[in-house]
Image (tube, rainbow, N blue to C red; front, side, top):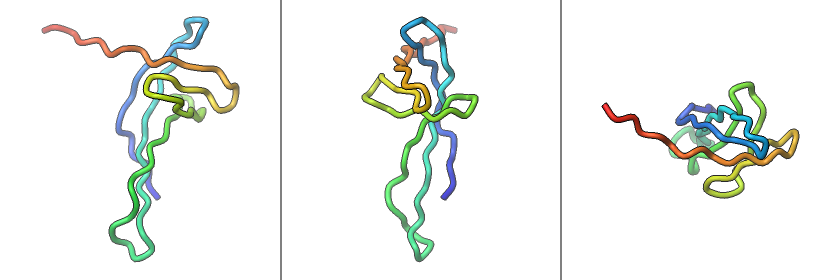
Amino acid sequence: MAAVLVGQFHARDAEGRVYSVHEFQESNPSADGFTGSEPVTTYKLAIGDRVNKLDEGTFVLVQSGVELIREPETIVAP
């Protein structure tokens, strides 16, 4: 099973601290080495702490239970 970084975003806790969250997809090859099941998406902080997704924009740090809200993406005009 291999994990590939597919995204990255920022999230804030209730006290305003900003966390850098990395999104990974882990492939699950089948026993025959060909088509496996759907990839599993996992989340971790840049420092390695695990993060669970609660819903579309809400996450929780596994170790401490701190809830994080995903920051909206900002588009920079050229």
